[in-house]
Length: 200
Image 1 (cartoon, rainbow, N blue to C red):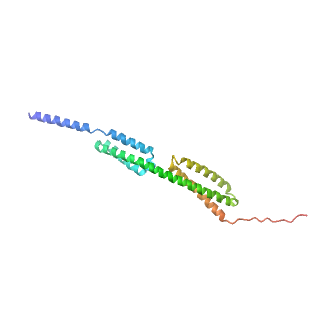
Image 2: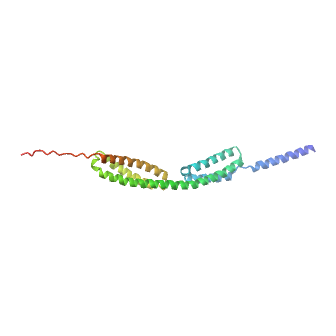
Image 3: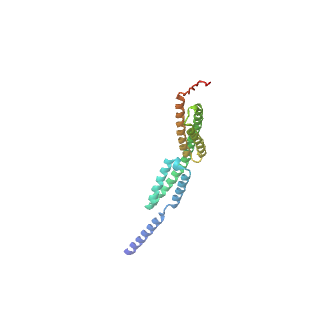
């Protein structure tokens, strides 16, 4: 009778253990949902335009992956749910970040256009003093105009790249602005023509 009680207890214990083990399945659905949200965040540019939010979400994802490897499925499940929410937040932040960066790039281009008009006008004023610099100015002027057009064209797709390119163009503009101010301040050299005696 005692053996029967022990046998029954052992069978019940093993059955309960199997039930508990059977219930603790890997949270594949939650992992897939979090992965989908992570991919959406990457597509939205969250890694560039909402880097802090994306990094936070990625660290939650990485922790969940570690818990999955350790077979801590309940913790991993909760982590994946949190990671999904964090990635979705990063998507929203990326849209706002991209808009802000686009606005900054547009403002930089507008400032370049205004600066270009002033610099081109200054070039005309000091044109006679530009000996030896005329060819370099013409080459840079063409490069600036081409670069400005390319920068405008890239704003919608890559505002970060457009802003960087605008910075490079601003450097070129500043260089010529300083050159023209220096030339404008320099006195004009007048060449005296000596009149020779007329031959008879």
